Amino acid sequence: MNLLARRLSHGLLILADTGVAALLVLLSTAGRQGLPMIVVPALVCVLPVAVRRIWPLSAYGGALVATVLTPVLETNSLTMSVVVALTIYTVSASRPVRQSATALAAGLLVVCGANLAWLTGIRQVNGWPDPLFVVGTAGLVMAAGWSLGTVARTRREFAAREDTRRAEQALIDERLRIARELHDVVAHTMSAITVKAGVAAKVLDKHPEEGRKALRDIEELGRGSLVEMRRMLGTLRAPGTTPENAPLPGIADLPSLAARAAEAGVRVELSVSGDVPEPMGLSVYRIVQEAITNVVRHAAPARCRVGVSVADGTLSISVVDDGPGRRVLPDETGGHGLTGMRERVMLYGGAFEAGPRPEGGFGVFASWEIS
Image (cartoon, rainbow, N blue to C red; front, side, top):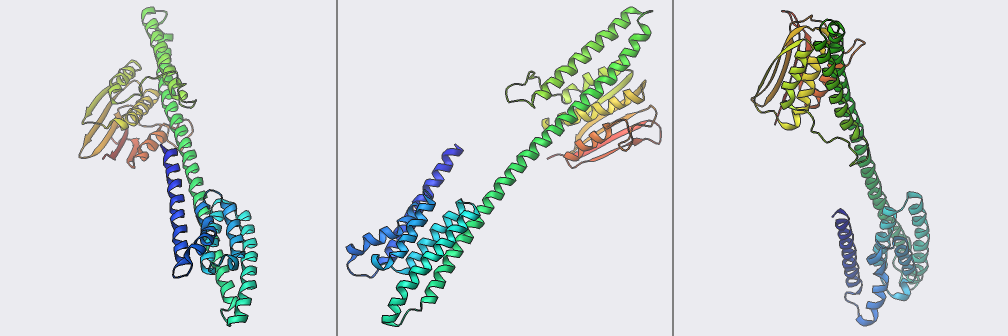
């Protein structure tokens, strides 16, 4: 469809050029005697305007030849100045600056020389017009056409570069998003696996059934995280090669997240109220996941309250626990969880706050406006 639209647009422009050429013929022949004898030369002179978008350089060369033959073809210099200006515009709009500037210089020599030659002869007979004035006007008209064409080409190239930059930036943003997703998946899974492995090591000899259950949980966690990572990494490959097509997690997956946290020693009280927009479900899930992962990593065993609500056009998230109030902050080495959560919230222009609570424990709070 886009290709068809471009072709249609190009065809309409050629049709418009043909109309301009016809108008120039009418203007150059208006009020003159012997109409059949002057229409054909006029058509020859303005033909380059009609074909300038098809053969820019050839049309420009034809306009210059017609200018030199102006006395023979009995056309006026004003019409030919317009024809040359329109054709040099097309050349400068479609060719590199060096090539179009060379064409302009050659054209100025041809047009100015031809005008001087035949206008000087007319002035000797009639005493008018001033050759320098006519030549100067023709040169200015050509220079104006070249300048406008160069500006048009520059703007088109700038727009193309801007489109390329935006596409590259979109690719960078997508890769950063995938990196952030991978961080959240790996951090949460490894924290849970570490806790489960510790449990298995402690109880395997005395309570083998509990130890085997912990090992099965580790297998399930590892398998699930591998599936999710393969799905995300598949988006970096060519379209259609993604090995997994399972949907990304969202609000509906928060209960299972809470259940896994309970198995790792963190009892989660989950509360969800209001309708969370589907496009924001993944961000909400990842923020809650990272917050709970921090509780598992730094505060287990502990209790944790998770609240997700939508009210008065605002989506709010809170995750508070009763464990030790210290966490790995963004400016400390060892983790980027809080930074990742803050970046997700900033994508929606929201507010993020995290830190120890006066009454004990640690709290993570995020909110943003939804349309």
